Every structure is written in structure tokens, then in C-alpha cells.
Image (cartoon, one colour):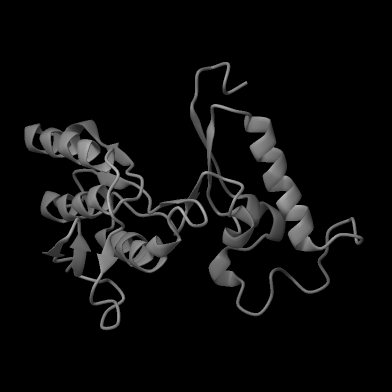
Length: 205
């Protein structure tokens, strides 16, 4: 149906929470609550979840890219074309983008095009986040070699922002070497990156 409507990409979300009733950060010592199990005891949890993912991929058919979000990474590999690799970034809280965007991209970018195309989440261009901060996040995503997604609040899209977005999409559309964090042993939000053969310093604070 989505294909008939003209969509070329579909993101599906929340299946892990729907199944287990827990977010990933709640799965400290168990996948779900004690005693829980699927109705079919002849299959493992992994087999059942993988069947779900395969059914979604098959239903999408040819010509539609599927982004898995809140999915099991190792079971998504080879099934979905893209995968949201972290929790949501934010157009309202910069600290969240730094933690869920910069950190996640730095440590999971090596999975790009090995498991799937990694989606570090959107650049949330809003009036709530200073442009000097989002401008850097935009640059990192655009030159990382991974997909670029932008959610732009109309009120926040001035001429400078529009020009930067246009440049960023042109950059991201090219095949580029994978971005490499250089100070990842010293910080959980790397500020020094190797992008397209040059070293770029960011100020996430």
C-alpha cells in the first residue's frame, strides 16, 4: 500500500518495546520480566523476532527502503537497508543530541554498510537549539559517509540555514570515506574527527 502511495522509504519503530515491554536501557539483566515467553515455545525469541523482521521486509517489496528503529541490531543486519543506531536526538535538548547523536555515531559508525546503513538520527533544526551547535552536527553527519536526515522547523530556516542544508545534502549524496573519531579513547563524545582526509575539530560543549 505504501508503495502504491508513492513512498520510497518506510521507517518502522517500537517493535522491541511492543514485544518485550521494555526499552533497551531497561534490559540490564533480562530481556523482559521473569516468566515471560512467546506463545510458541518451539522457537527461540531470536527466531520469532527475525521472522517478524523478514515479514516486514518482504511486505515492503522491491523499490522501498526500510529503516528499522528500536530493533535488535544483530537481527536487523542483512534484513533492513537502514537502521537507527541510537535513541532519539532532539530539537529541544542539545545534551540529548550530543549523547544520542554524536556519541552513537562515533562508536557505531564502523557498522555502516557492514550490517546496514547506519542512521544517526536527524538534525533537529529548531529555534530551541543554537545554530552554531546544530551547524556542527549537520556537518558531521553530512561528511560522515552515513545517511543524512534533517527535520527543519520553518521558523528556524533562515537563509544561512537553507544554504547550509543544501550544501550538506549535496555532500552527503556523494560516496565518501567513513568518518573516523580520533579521540574516542579520551571522550565519549569525540571532538576530533577525520573527515574526507582532513582533521576537523568540533566543540560539542
